[in-house]
Image (cartoon, rainbow over all chains, first blue to last red; front, side, top):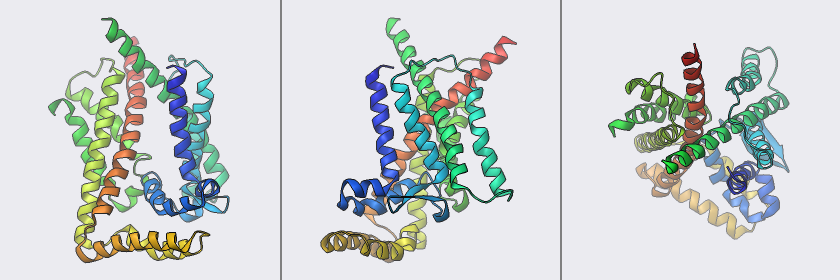
Length: 154
Length: 171
C-alpha cells in the first residue's frame, strides 16, 4: 500500500468519525444540525444508540455508544499511525483475538452485574479492538495488492 | 450465481436478523462481519477447499456480496414490515426530534423545512405504509454500511481462516 491509499483510507475514517459527533459538525457549520436525524438513522445501523451509553461532546450526544465510539476512535488513530509505518503481513491473527478479550470481558462483566456500565471502560476496550481490527484490515489489503501484482506478472 | 451461493444464503440470514428487534441492536457492528466470515467458511466447504489457502480477492468479493445481499434483504423486510404495520422507528422518535430541533439555534425557516420534510414522510407511512424517500434512505443506508462491514469481514475473516489452514497444514 502506498501513501495515497493510506491517506485516502485515513480521510474516509476521519469523515466517519466526524459524523459520530454532531457537536463537531455544529461547530463547523450551524446548519449541519438539520442532518442530525439522517445521521442518527445512518449510525443506527451500526449501534444500538442507548441514551445512557452515549458520549456527550460539545453539548451533543454522540451518534454511537461509548464502545462503538472507542472502536472507531481506535480505527482513526491507527489509520493515522499506519500512514507512517510499513505494514508487516506476517503478524499472527491471535493478536486480533487477544485485542477482543477486554471488550468481551467488559460486555460480560457489565451484563452479569459485576460492575455498572462505565463509559471509560467501554471506550478503552473498544479502542484496543478498533486499533487491532484496522491493522489486520490493512494487512488484508496489503496481501490483496501483492496478489494483484503476482496476477499481473503472470 | 452458484459460485457465490454462500453469500446469498448467509446474506439472507443477516438480512433477516437486521429486522429482528434484539438482534437489530447488534446489526452490522457484529452481524455483517460475522456473516461475511461464515460465508467464507461456507464457500470453502461447498467448494471442498477446506485445506486450500483462500485468496484475499475472493474473500473480498464474498464479503462485499454478503453485505449487498444482507442490505437488499434487510431493506426489503424493513419496507415490508413498515408497509404491513404502517409504523416504524421514525414515527416513534419524531415527537422527541420535533422538540429537539425547536431548541436548536438555527433559523426558523430551516427548522420548518426540516420538520415539513419529516412530517410528509411520517404522514405517508401512516396513510399508506410506504414513503419513497424513506425507502430510498433505508436502501442507501443499508447498502453503504453493509458493504463497508461486509468488506471488512471478508478481508479480516480470510486471515483467520487462512491462518488456521496454515497451522493445520504444518502439522
